[in-house]
Each structure stands twice: as C-alpha cells, then as structure tokens.
Image (cartoon, rainbow, N blue to C red; front, side, top):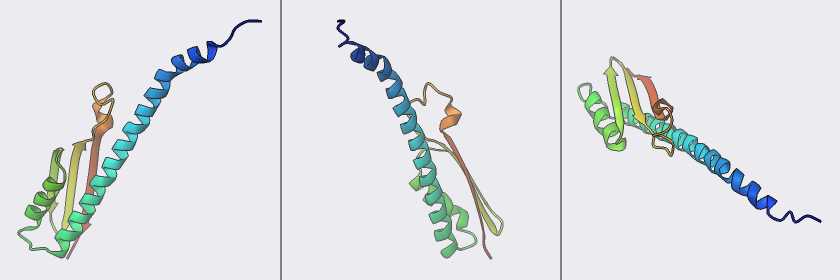
Length: 117
C-alpha cells in the first residue's frame, strides 16, 4: 500500500496563490464599488443641500467647498450652473493591484445633473 498523505498538502500549496489572488481581486472590486457609492451619495447630498440653501451667486462656491472637503483624491471636478447643476467628478480608488493592473480600472467617473427653478 502506498503512502498518499502528502498529496493534499501539495495540492493545497499549489492552489493557495490562486485562492489569494482571487480574494484580492474580489476585495479590489468591492473597494471600487464602495467608493462609487460613497461618491454618488456625497454628490446627491451636496446637490440637495445646495438647492435647499441656494443663492444664485454662491451655488458653485458652495458645491466646490463641500465636495472638496468630503473627497480628498479628486483628479478632476467640473461644476456648471445654468438653471441645471452639472457636476462631473473623476477620481481614483485605492486597490491591491492598482500598480500592477491598468489604472483606468480604478478610475471613478461620475456625472450628476439636477435642474432647479
């Protein structure tokens, strides 16, 4: 009878890197989706607050101030105000494979538009 006690250990050691890489990818995509949801919530709350407390001259200033205080890593921020507030934000999420993989995978690009009277 052969002694097969080491086969499971060898299989586990061979599969461990694949399991760890898969877990890291799942965590990365979780981080990206959480960041998108966070940015979306901040934009919604900011626009609603600004429209409730609006002065025509100060809308862009208020939006700029609130967004920049809540989001640190903004790469691009555009605010347009012509009876419709348009906000376009581009930022990067952090991740485990950010330096290895394509950086565009970690780029979050969100645009919001809300009209008022």
